[in-house]
Length: 276
Image 1 (cartoon, one colour):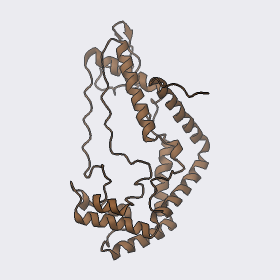
Image 2 (tube, rainbow, N blue to C red):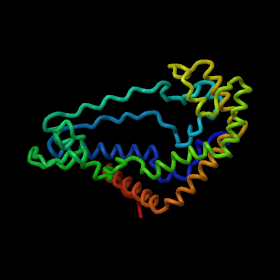
Image 3 (cartoon, helix red, strand yellow):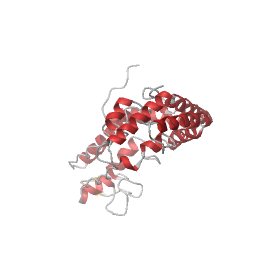
C-alpha cells in the first residue's frame, strides 16, 4: 500500500468528519445570532478560523507517502504551516448588555457560555438563558458536555492509542527497521522511524531546504519499497477493532449521539429532513 489516504480506519464512524464538525459550527453560529436577535441585538459571530486539515484522517497519519510531493514540499504537506503557528487572538466579545446576553455573565472570571455563567438577567424584557446565547446554542446542539461538541473521549483514546501500539508492534517495528536501513543507504542514518525524520528541527524553516526535500522523498520511497504504510495501517486497524469490541456499548451511544447532533444541526440550518 503506497498511501492510506483513501482507507478508513475502524474508529472513523465514531469520530467527527471535517464536514460534520463544520456543520455543527455553522449551526452553532446560526443559533447564537438568532438568540441575540431575540433580545433586539444585532450580532454576527466571527467567521471560523480553519486550520490546515488533511483531506482524510489517514492521509498523513503515517507521514508523507508521495515521493513527487515530498520532493517538492518536503515533510510539510501542501497548505500546512511550516513553523508552529501563533495561537489566534480570541475574538473581541461585545460589552455591556450585549456581552451579558452573549455569554450569560458580566464576570470576567467566568468562562463565557459556561456553567459558571448562570444567566437570569433581564435584558430588553427577556431573561438571559444560562450560559447566554452561547450556552443556549451548545445545549440545543447537545455540544455542552465534557467534549464540548468535539470527539468523544473514548473514540479519541482508541484512535491515538492504536497508532502508538501499532508503532511499537513487532510487525511494524520490523518494517520500520528495514525503512531505517533504506534511509541509511540514501545518506540519512540518524532516523529510527518516519516520525523522527519528519520532526527533525532542521526542517523548521519558512521554505523547505534542498536537504529536507531530499530526505522527505527518500522517506516516501523507502516506505513504498518496504510496504511500511500497508503493514502499519493493517496493524493499526487491528488494534482499533479490538478496542471497539471491548467498548461496543459505549461506542454505540457515541455513534447515536453523533447522529442526533447532526440532526439538530440540520434543524438549526433549516435543512429539510430526508424523505421517508
